[in-house]
Image 1 (cartoon, one colour):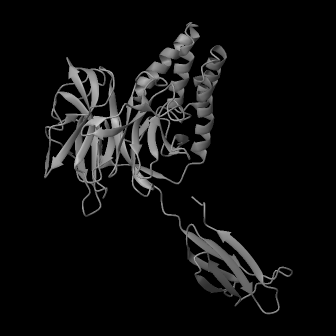
Image 2 (cartoon, one colour; image 1 turned 90 degrees about the vertical axis):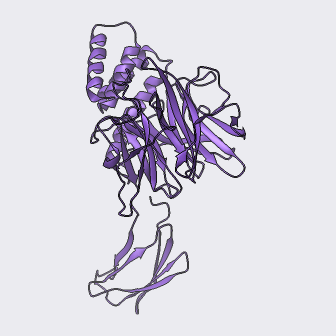
Length: 434
């Protein structure tokens, strides 16, 4: 995921195209790399070439649409503010944050930084095996330096990561990838419970999948009557690459046969890092939907049949031309954390905080004679809100009236009365203003 590797790979594909290499997939890979480098115009050109050469593959059209929309989103960003959470990040990969409890004052995350339980190097990444760390929010409002979780959560001879904790913070689901001869063999989902300050030995979740299938990235929604688990895996019956699957707990540690979340969510690309919000909305990362770069973050909502059929890209600046994934969102849906390898971090994947600033509304107007333009002072303006609150405003010596604390999601009616003039009414609303 490092930009130098992207540039080298792009150079290779460009040379292959110039040499008239016969495999048309080269055009698609080259376009993908150009898109990740935010070179959308050039990427669109090669997606178009790929579509001409392979018109039955929808990836060319999706790529062209991605370049078109990405440029629009960059010019018209959402109001979210995204900043690196520097205290959690290192020069290595730091990713997949998870809330430690319903108070949001603990964050668990995965890291390949130095100082973990294992000194072995993963041949694929050139970095240490990953471990799970935790950081706590201090009374000052700042996060403390992360602590490495001891055994038995971290083992020293495997990758531990992509964790999810229940609201009480006493049950952790996480991915463990076994290693042999410094190579990853298989990933599975484990669960551990916390008593006091100690975590129990992790137990393998008994999910009905074929042996040898790699699964991971658990997200669980717990209620009194039901446990729902969404995870990522490449299995038969999917749409290609890693898909998102759903299963429910039946008894103890046994889970139902996983069901694919369907074509509205899953694509021929990869869908990973799901997060089930309390509202039932499903956040996830994908490189198969229309997006800005590598992995983009999306949210899926259920329709009237309780099926995830409405999928939306979270746009810029939540997403970027780089890989953006591993999002978690607080109850209000206005603040949370995500992972990105965009420019501005410490290196590799980093954890970012995002927040939607509170909207502040105010009312201001000037009262004049509609025929002469003369400023009218001392005019009474009655303001009534949809919650039946009433206010009286008076125009000043410049004809100006104002009110600063206009409320969101509220409708207002104005009534202006002045001797010698017909009454004037007007209405406005702050509903649906985001």
